[in-house]
Image 1 (cartoon, rainbow, N blue to C red):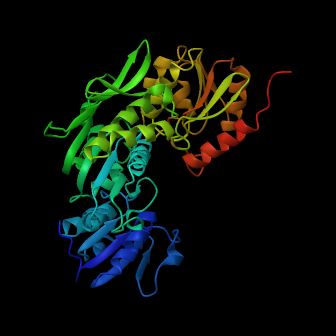
Image 2: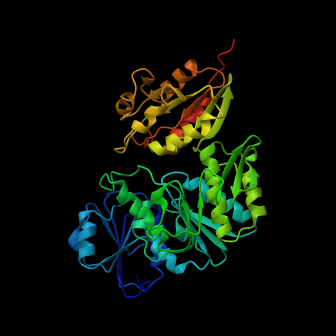
Image 3: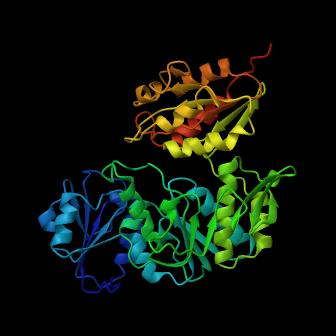
Length: 444
């Protein structure tokens, strides 16, 4: 790929947060023409467009797009849309904001992708770097556009990268990168094929100096099979040791951190911490800073977040769990803390997933599952004995609390996207937290 934009005819396709920041960057170049396209008639941020920019709203025109040299496509738009493919066939370069950022960033970059856990690991690596006194900027899929964090004063960039962002990345040189895990997610965009999804994530390793993999997930290994370090649930390389004295994070069998001092909950977060340590070591963050961050990191909202304990029942907000694997991770992570059992609140838009992996928990770790949302019926088929149908999240919570016994957990971990009943997983999580906060004790 060529970073030279001067004299090029460039189209920005999609007015999302990332491309709004890109437009400001592109306007500083000597372009032959800059045009903006969005399939929506009234997209967000349209009022922020500078005067004189060619703005095209409504259905895309493949023949028109084919007249451009470069298309900067928003991650939310599939590069396999017929109009985009028509432009690519005519010779247009299809890139995204991360590709443009790769040519401008001067500081080392850490890249993190995976189906689950990437926001937590991104935030944790950032906290470790900041504990070391490194001026750190975090962005991309984390919610901050990369061109909003670009600065010559930054000492380290930490980027959470989605498969959609990686699809249009060719020149990203990472100091260290990882795929945390690969499980069924976004299969509606990848033709129902998890291998296509995994291949998009594998692009993170194309120019990665130090590759870090999950040794229990073969889909996280680069095609070459070569890697700098691995993390996993045992005490090999970066991992954890479970013994009579407790559970410890380890490096090559050496105990580094007692997991009782972790604020974040669950065995899945212990693995997230191990991955973060590997990435931190890969870019020279001292172990002392890593340990300080592990001891103080409180986690992110909507990710297995303990909201309240009422009448001996613990309430967890894991609204970010929009796929089955994430819900499994939450259940596995909490089962040791709550041997009396978990009551699961699940449902929403299933995105074509197979829910059957959840069946193994019903009647065992999960004592009952309350199902709501558009694809609730698919969850209900997992068991007639241990599932219940409810209209919405409020009813699910109220019935779960009425059923719950002291020592048990009520876990919102929906395994589904939220857009059937909510604006996003954040709103779903905020509503759950509000409902839990207003619950009254059952004790007289």
